[in-house]
Amino acid sequence: MGKGSGIFWFIGWLFTIGFADLVWWKIILGIIIWPYFLGVAAG
Image 1: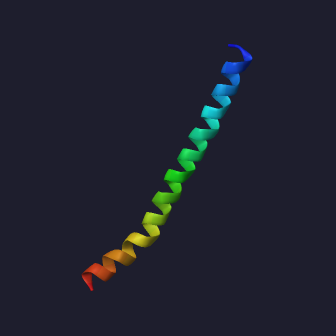
Image 2 (image 1 turned 180 degrees about the vertical axis):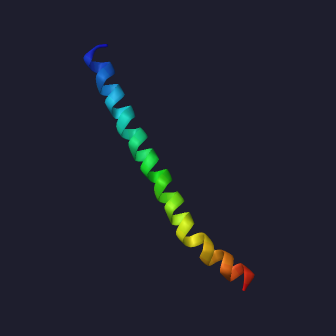
């Protein structure tokens, strides 16, 4: 592996962590908001 492939791997690693954080943020937000919307729909 040359220097270029190492940089490419690092960028991919950062993107993967950023994408995972985005997904977890959406999951946590959904867990917090979903009961509220469910209560509004049922009410």
